[in-house]
Length: 405
Image 1: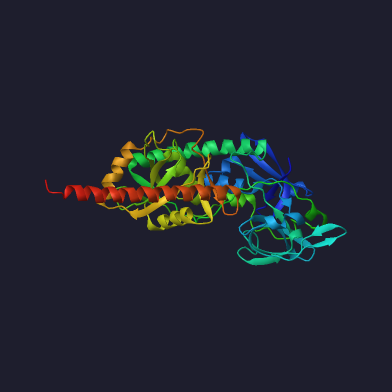
Image 2 (image 1 turned 45 degrees about the vertical axis):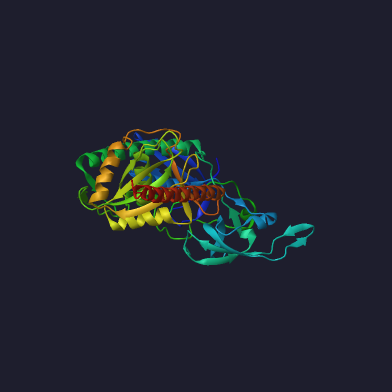
């Protein structure tokens, strides 16, 4: 099955296929690049994928082939759209990197031999490659659309099998470490740098392939796949008693049935932050539930708050329910007592459902994001109305209590 893979050597996207191999009792994933010899293959051993961060890093590098934008699609290109575009690295060598559309300079289209030809200019902000963070102006012919995935969409059966096996091993190890931490009343702190990971999938591109060279060997290898897995960022962890001064984030509009484990694993996967999470039971009449996330440092609180509060992304369940972060604060004695009660009523760590506990990040510019934003705004409208009712109740109670008997 034809796919795209973002090479760890130059961060560019190439046409590729995946093959799984059994090597001495260990599973290995081989990335084979189209029109390149076997010595260009990149290898990933399952035993070296020791964290969800490693697994997500690999997953984020694989997707369906992107599709060339057509002249008639010009009007559908909006700010925030994720694209894969060709960039000249050196004369005669153009490579494909991801970028966001930062702006469009519209121009009147012309017709050549009866066919429409787009003459607009598109401003791109690169998110991969040697010019990451900079802006470039390109014509439509250099831009491919990255198709966003549906929930649980399978890219390739071999890839899915490999990732699922690796994920199961990682989750079992992670679950055991969390259980030990809870029994000891300790936090494990991990200071890996946060990063935004995007999982997008698409379909094939043809027009650019006719006049664009996808070169791999001409640039020096910045890092091999083995180095990427075997030498993760350094970690500086320490333990802290829960009786110390943790920070908490309140999250509402969680999917009913979500487990604490799912939240902790998701946050660790996205930011490499260890935390504790507790999910509150909900009333039968409620369509959502709520929870708290506890962190043991201001640094981790800021990282998670920035991640959850960014207007460019929304966290949703597999059913599309968006998270709503209502407050982050430092735990004092009064709040600590409330949290202890909350923890006692929280769903057990091991209780998990299959249909509603998976989480994903949707990015601004996608159809899923637009739908999630509408749902998030609706929830805010609901909670604002609810807050007004509470204030009215408090006022009316005070008025009644002040009445002379």
